[in-house]
Length: 233
Image 1 (spheres, rainbow, N blue to C red):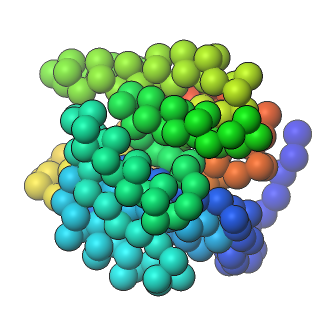
Image 2 (image 1 turned 180 degrees about the horizontal axis):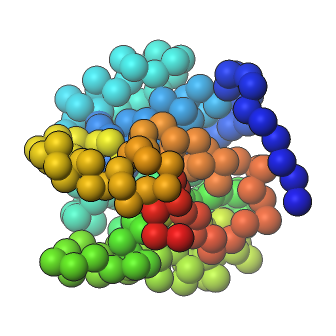
């Protein structure tokens, strides 16, 4: 085993220098935090969101300013995904690595494979702990997140031989706009469910995403990493 004590502040390591990262849902929440962390790590970031103005606002919060790109993307529409991928590639000169799900994964893998046999990439999908454990009265949500886990593992098996790694993260309760309308009673309930006694911040998920996109995780394929504060261990 290995153990350490955190006595220093995090400094930029530029572990993604020279990489292009496309982040879906980059206009808010975990997606926005991912954009900020990936930019800090040296990546050129394509911020994709159904709300283009929100994506453009994310650009103003990222280090590196003019290097990054905002594009409109509705991940429910194949044509929107394909148009955004083309725009990203035209502006960046190469296919990006990314965060996303089925249509985006399909479009990215196709673009990367067409770019050349020596291209490498990494995909990190955002699922949820609820996709693994289930949750009463949230069957639609948990089923969709469980589907992301299965999709991740299937794509990982299919794409690993083509030098594309696919992994996912499973956050628990994270402070994002989804919780904006929750009562203090509900928020305190979530805190009690978590051994650390508090909800997670989006940037804590983003740090794990950055690791999974980097070469530091080069032997991780089909992994589903829990970012939960110990919730439902």
